[in-house]
Every structure is written in C-alpha cells, then in structure tokens.
Image (cartoon, rainbow, N blue to C red):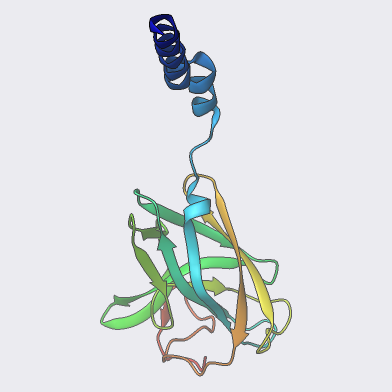
Length: 178
C-alpha cells in the first residue's frame, strides 16, 4: 500500500510539473499573438448621409475601444470616394469643418462619437450617388498599422447645419446647403 501511495505521489508531482512549466508550453504561449486593436475597436450604428454623385457627404457612428490602451484612428478609405477624417471646430468666431489633425483618439475602454456637427468620416467626392438604403464599405486605418473594415447604411438626413460642400480648407458651418 505504501509503495502504491508513493508511486501515485510521484506520478501526480511529475504530471503537475509538466503542466506548469515545460518549454513547449511557454513557447506556445509566446507564439500566440496578442489581440490587435482591430479586433477590439468596433463601430456601432454606422450610417452615411445619402448624397448625389460628386457631392460631399459624411459617415457617422460610435467608435468603441474595448482595449486597455488608447487607439488612434489615423485614416479611412472607401471604394465609394476619396476620404478624410474631419472635425467641426471654432475658428475666427465661426464654426468650421476641417481635416482632423492627428486623427481620432479613442480612449482605453471608451467611446468616440462620430456625428453630424462633430467629428466625422468625410466622403470628399463620391463617384456615384449614395441613396437611402445603400450599403457603403469603409476601412479605418489605425496608428498601429491595423485596419477595421465596416459597412454603413445610407440614410436621408437634412443635416445639423453643417456644410459638406466644398469652399475653403476651413468650411463655415451652414454656408452652403448640405
């Protein structure tokens, strides 16, 4: 009986040690890539303002960062149009739309709203009309080199007084019909 208990103890001790620290286990753990920002940055409720061909318009939604680190969106692409990241800001006492220098920072475990009258994804010159119900593909480009693809549904929207029509580099809000 004593030999059986001793043998069982040795087997259990050996089994426990191989489960905790073998070279194979640590190599496998090191080879497993950490999740990238692309798998944890999402866009909720994405939509794009319907527009005629060649007319500036914008895409909106809520960027959600589920990581423990800030994530910066530095660019956006779409097969529908050349794109820019834009913001609305006060300039010379007037609310203007302009390219967003440095991109959109989405704080760790936070959100960043893209909405009419605020930060948005600007479609500079859509090649074709974007009609209500159309689905438009986008790809967010992050500072770490990863990308986040998503699709937004087009909706009719009268606007929040902002102008999506070209004028100067800084566009006064409400200077032209949206």
